[in-house]
Length: 187
Figure 1 (spheres, one colour):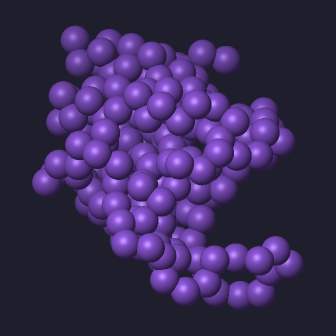
Figure 2 (cartoon, rainbow, N blue to C red):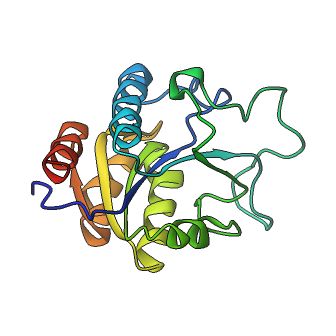
């Protein structure tokens, strides 16, 4: 389905486009995901809408069946990639779980700005992006997902999120579709 609307006070959330992650093997070329994320960032900044840059610097506690990273990350691992061109006005969230809202002040910061909708892009589709989208939905935000500005290392996770989960959380579309709606709203 095509995107239908963006609220006047919509924020962009870009998940985990950081130095320690972008060199991992993904199913879609990361350069394209980065370029489309940057196009969204530019469009939001041009309109004075909030841009949220999220990085991950740890993992949630608890036992899991699969091994997880433990200990500290290499120097620079959590740094945002330069292509995002982090600005002083950007909202920066460092998470230690999959989703950007868990154990952070993101919800209160967005609501203090009057944000009612979020557009989400980044990596990985089936973990950081999906968890952030689920949490945004649960906090009452309208959710839009820019499908061509995200990817995952696991095709089955990406496909499941895109085809089954995301349509239940909000609207899905392309980067250009989001930019077109922003342009219509500002005329």
